[in-house]
Image (cartoon, rainbow, N blue to C red):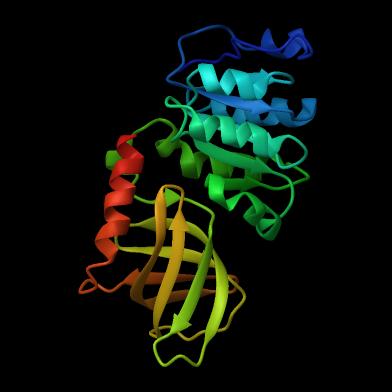
Length: 245
Protein backbone atom coordinates (compact mmCIF):
# COMPACT_ATOMS: atom_id res chain seq x y z
CA UNK A 1 0.00 0.00 0.00
CA UNK A 2 8.19 2.41 -6.12
CA UNK A 3 17.06 12.20 -11.48
CA UNK A 4 16.65 14.98 -9.62
CA UNK A 5 17.78 15.74 -6.13
CA UNK A 6 15.27 18.41 -5.27
CA UNK A 7 12.41 19.65 -3.19
CA UNK A 8 11.42 22.50 -5.46
CA UNK A 9 8.21 23.59 -3.77
CA UNK A 10 7.52 23.97 -0.07
CA UNK A 11 5.15 25.81 2.18
CA UNK A 12 6.72 28.68 4.12
CA UNK A 13 6.60 26.61 7.30
CA UNK A 14 9.05 24.09 5.84
CA UNK A 15 12.67 24.55 6.85
CA UNK A 16 14.73 26.32 4.12
CA UNK A 17 17.73 24.24 5.18
CA UNK A 18 16.02 21.07 4.02
CA UNK A 19 14.94 22.44 0.65
CA UNK A 20 18.40 23.87 0.05
CA UNK A 21 19.97 20.48 0.65
CA UNK A 22 18.87 19.20 -2.76
CA UNK A 23 20.00 21.02 -5.92
CA UNK A 24 17.27 21.64 -8.50
CA UNK A 25 16.83 19.36 -11.48
CA UNK A 26 13.71 18.35 -13.40
CA UNK A 27 11.79 15.58 -11.62
CA UNK A 28 10.18 12.57 -13.28
CA UNK A 29 7.25 12.68 -10.83
CA UNK A 30 5.98 14.61 -7.83
CA UNK A 31 4.57 13.46 -4.52
CA UNK A 32 2.71 15.68 -2.07
CA UNK A 33 3.68 15.37 1.60
CA UNK A 34 0.61 16.59 3.50
CA UNK A 35 0.57 17.63 7.16
CA UNK A 36 3.58 15.57 8.20
CA UNK A 37 6.09 16.15 10.97
CA UNK A 38 9.34 17.81 9.87
CA UNK A 39 11.33 14.68 10.66
CA UNK A 40 8.97 12.51 8.59
CA UNK A 41 9.09 15.02 5.73
CA UNK A 42 12.88 14.78 5.66
CA UNK A 43 12.96 10.97 5.69
CA UNK A 44 10.32 10.59 2.98
CA UNK A 45 11.81 13.33 0.78
CA UNK A 46 15.16 11.51 0.87
CA UNK A 47 13.54 8.15 0.06
CA UNK A 48 11.54 9.48 -2.90
CA UNK A 49 14.52 11.52 -4.12
CA UNK A 50 16.52 8.33 -4.63
CA UNK A 51 14.09 7.34 -7.39
CA UNK A 52 13.79 10.72 -9.06
CA UNK A 53 10.55 11.67 -7.34
CA UNK A 54 10.25 15.27 -6.15
CA UNK A 55 8.61 15.97 -2.79
CA UNK A 56 6.28 18.93 -2.37
CA UNK A 57 5.54 19.76 1.27
CA UNK A 58 2.07 21.06 2.15
CA UNK A 59 0.97 22.35 5.55
CA UNK A 60 -2.09 24.29 4.37
CA UNK A 61 -4.53 24.37 1.44
CA UNK A 62 -3.62 20.79 0.53
CA UNK A 63 -7.10 19.87 -0.70
CA UNK A 64 -7.28 22.94 -2.93
CA UNK A 65 -3.84 22.28 -4.42
CA UNK A 66 -4.67 18.65 -5.12
CA UNK A 67 -7.74 19.78 -7.03
CA UNK A 68 -5.66 22.05 -9.27
CA UNK A 69 -2.11 20.66 -9.49
CA UNK A 70 -0.89 17.35 -10.90
CA UNK A 71 0.81 14.88 -8.54
CA UNK A 72 1.78 11.26 -9.13
CA UNK A 73 1.58 10.41 -5.41
CA UNK A 74 0.45 11.79 -2.07
CA UNK A 75 1.48 10.90 1.50
CA UNK A 76 -0.86 12.10 4.22
CA UNK A 77 -1.34 11.59 7.92
CA UNK A 78 -4.52 9.62 8.62
CA UNK A 79 -5.83 12.15 11.09
CA UNK A 80 -8.16 15.13 11.01
CA UNK A 81 -8.56 16.49 7.52
CA UNK A 82 -7.33 13.37 5.75
CA UNK A 83 -10.71 12.57 4.24
CA UNK A 84 -11.03 16.02 2.68
CA UNK A 85 -7.61 15.71 1.04
CA UNK A 86 -8.29 12.21 -0.29
CA UNK A 87 -11.69 13.31 -1.60
CA UNK A 88 -10.02 16.23 -3.40
CA UNK A 89 -7.42 13.95 -4.97
CA UNK A 90 -9.81 11.23 -6.09
CA UNK A 91 -12.31 13.69 -7.59
CA UNK A 92 -9.63 15.68 -9.42
CA UNK A 93 -9.35 14.73 -13.12
CA UNK A 94 -5.56 14.92 -12.94
CA UNK A 95 -5.07 13.14 -9.58
CA UNK A 96 -7.84 10.53 -9.50
CA UNK A 97 -5.27 7.76 -10.07
CA UNK A 98 -2.41 9.15 -7.99
CA UNK A 99 -0.77 6.73 -5.56
CA UNK A 100 -2.14 7.40 -2.06
CA UNK A 101 0.04 6.56 0.93
CA UNK A 102 -1.30 6.72 4.48
CA UNK A 103 0.93 7.47 7.46
CA UNK A 104 0.05 6.34 10.98
CA UNK A 105 -2.48 3.91 12.33
CA UNK A 106 -2.89 0.34 11.21
CA UNK A 107 -4.62 -1.51 8.39
CA UNK A 108 -7.91 -1.68 10.30
CA UNK A 109 -7.95 2.07 10.86
CA UNK A 110 -7.03 2.62 7.22
CA UNK A 111 -10.18 0.75 6.23
CA UNK A 112 -12.14 3.84 7.32
CA UNK A 113 -10.86 5.38 4.12
CA UNK A 114 -11.14 2.31 1.88
CA UNK A 115 -13.53 4.07 -0.50
CA UNK A 116 -10.64 6.34 -1.48
CA UNK A 117 -8.35 3.43 -2.38
CA UNK A 118 -5.29 3.89 -0.16
CA UNK A 119 -2.46 2.10 -1.95
CA UNK A 120 0.00 1.54 0.88
CA UNK A 121 0.79 2.49 4.48
CA UNK A 122 3.85 3.97 6.16
CA UNK A 123 3.83 3.04 9.85
CA UNK A 124 4.79 5.21 12.81
CA UNK A 125 7.32 5.75 14.14
CA UNK A 126 8.64 6.23 10.61
CA UNK A 127 11.97 4.47 10.12
CA UNK A 128 14.09 5.12 7.07
CA UNK A 129 14.83 1.46 6.09
CA UNK A 130 11.13 0.50 6.16
CA UNK A 131 10.12 3.72 4.37
CA UNK A 132 12.73 3.20 1.65
CA UNK A 133 11.59 -0.40 1.18
CA UNK A 134 8.00 0.70 0.64
CA UNK A 135 8.96 3.47 -1.78
CA UNK A 136 11.14 1.05 -3.73
CA UNK A 137 8.29 -1.47 -3.93
CA UNK A 138 5.80 1.08 -5.25
CA UNK A 139 8.01 3.42 -7.29
CA UNK A 140 7.08 1.85 -10.64
CA UNK A 141 3.46 2.76 -10.13
CA UNK A 142 4.39 6.32 -9.15
CA UNK A 143 6.67 6.66 -12.17
CA UNK A 144 4.14 5.07 -14.55
CA UNK A 145 6.58 2.34 -15.62
CA UNK A 146 3.84 -0.24 -15.94
CA UNK A 147 5.62 -2.67 -18.24
CA UNK A 148 7.76 -3.66 -15.25
CA UNK A 149 5.06 -3.32 -12.61
CA UNK A 150 1.96 -5.42 -13.10
CA UNK A 151 0.76 -5.65 -9.49
CA UNK A 152 -1.21 -2.75 -8.07
CA UNK A 153 -0.91 -2.04 -4.34
CA UNK A 154 -4.40 -1.33 -3.04
CA UNK A 155 -5.87 -1.58 0.46
CA UNK A 156 -9.53 -2.56 0.67
CA UNK A 157 -11.61 -4.96 2.72
CA UNK A 158 -11.98 -8.40 1.16
CA UNK A 159 -14.50 -11.08 2.13
CA UNK A 160 -13.18 -14.64 1.79
CA UNK A 161 -15.43 -17.71 1.80
CA UNK A 162 -14.22 -21.28 1.33
CA UNK A 163 -15.85 -23.24 -1.48
CA UNK A 164 -17.59 -25.54 1.02
CA UNK A 165 -18.91 -22.57 2.98
CA UNK A 166 -17.31 -23.65 6.26
CA UNK A 167 -14.73 -20.87 6.46
CA UNK A 168 -15.65 -17.22 6.22
CA UNK A 169 -13.46 -14.27 7.21
CA UNK A 170 -12.44 -10.73 6.29
CA UNK A 171 -8.99 -9.73 5.12
CA UNK A 172 -7.21 -6.65 3.79
CA UNK A 173 -5.86 -6.57 0.25
CA UNK A 174 -2.17 -5.79 -0.21
CA UNK A 175 -1.57 -6.12 -3.96
CA UNK A 176 -3.65 -7.28 -6.88
CA UNK A 177 -3.29 -8.16 -10.52
CA UNK A 178 -5.58 -9.55 -13.19
CA UNK A 179 -4.51 -13.03 -12.07
CA UNK A 180 -4.90 -12.81 -8.32
CA UNK A 181 -4.23 -10.90 -5.12
CA UNK A 182 -2.31 -11.01 -1.86
CA UNK A 183 -4.18 -10.50 1.40
CA UNK A 184 -3.22 -9.57 4.95
CA UNK A 185 -4.85 -11.89 7.48
CA UNK A 186 -4.04 -13.96 10.55
CA UNK A 187 -6.56 -16.61 9.52
CA UNK A 188 -5.06 -20.10 9.34
CA UNK A 189 -6.26 -21.48 6.02
CA UNK A 190 -4.42 -24.29 4.21
CA UNK A 191 -2.76 -23.78 0.84
CA UNK A 192 -4.80 -25.23 -2.00
CA UNK A 193 -8.13 -24.29 -0.41
CA UNK A 194 -10.70 -23.21 -2.99
CA UNK A 195 -12.30 -19.89 -2.08
CA UNK A 196 -14.45 -17.08 -3.39
CA UNK A 197 -13.34 -13.52 -2.71
CA UNK A 198 -15.42 -10.36 -2.96
CA UNK A 199 -14.34 -6.74 -2.84
CA UNK A 200 -14.91 -3.28 -4.30
CA UNK A 201 -12.30 -0.90 -5.76
CA UNK A 202 -12.95 2.81 -6.19
CA UNK A 203 -14.99 2.85 -9.43
CA UNK A 204 -15.36 -0.95 -9.49
CA UNK A 205 -18.58 -2.10 -7.77
CA UNK A 206 -18.32 -5.17 -5.54
CA UNK A 207 -17.20 -8.17 -7.54
CA UNK A 208 -17.06 -11.88 -6.64
CA UNK A 209 -14.32 -14.11 -8.05
CA UNK A 210 -13.46 -17.77 -7.44
CA UNK A 211 -9.88 -18.70 -6.70
CA UNK A 212 -7.51 -20.82 -4.63
CA UNK A 213 -4.97 -20.20 -1.87
CA UNK A 214 -1.57 -20.63 -3.54
CA UNK A 215 0.78 -19.56 -0.73
CA UNK A 216 0.72 -18.76 2.98
CA UNK A 217 2.91 -16.67 5.27
CA UNK A 218 2.40 -15.93 8.98
CA UNK A 219 0.25 -12.85 8.31
CA UNK A 220 -0.63 -13.03 4.62
CA UNK A 221 -1.93 -15.33 1.90
CA UNK A 222 -1.97 -15.38 -1.88
CA UNK A 223 -5.11 -16.04 -3.94
CA UNK A 224 -4.95 -17.02 -7.60
CA UNK A 225 -8.14 -16.26 -9.50
CA UNK A 226 -9.85 -19.14 -11.29
CA UNK A 227 -9.02 -18.75 -14.98
CA UNK A 228 -12.45 -20.15 -15.90
CA UNK A 229 -14.33 -17.54 -13.85
CA UNK A 230 -15.32 -14.85 -16.34
CA UNK A 231 -15.93 -12.38 -13.51
CA UNK A 232 -12.18 -11.87 -13.14
CA UNK A 233 -12.30 -9.96 -16.44
CA UNK A 234 -13.96 -7.12 -14.51
CA UNK A 235 -10.87 -6.96 -12.29
CA UNK A 236 -8.56 -7.01 -15.32
CA UNK A 237 -10.50 -4.22 -17.01
CA UNK A 238 -10.40 -2.12 -13.85
CA UNK A 239 -6.62 -2.59 -13.46
CA UNK A 240 -6.02 -1.70 -17.11
CA UNK A 241 -8.14 1.42 -16.69
CA UNK A 242 -6.39 2.34 -13.42
CA UNK A 243 -2.95 2.09 -15.02
CA UNK A 244 -3.98 3.95 -18.15
CA UNK A 245 -5.54 6.69 -16.04
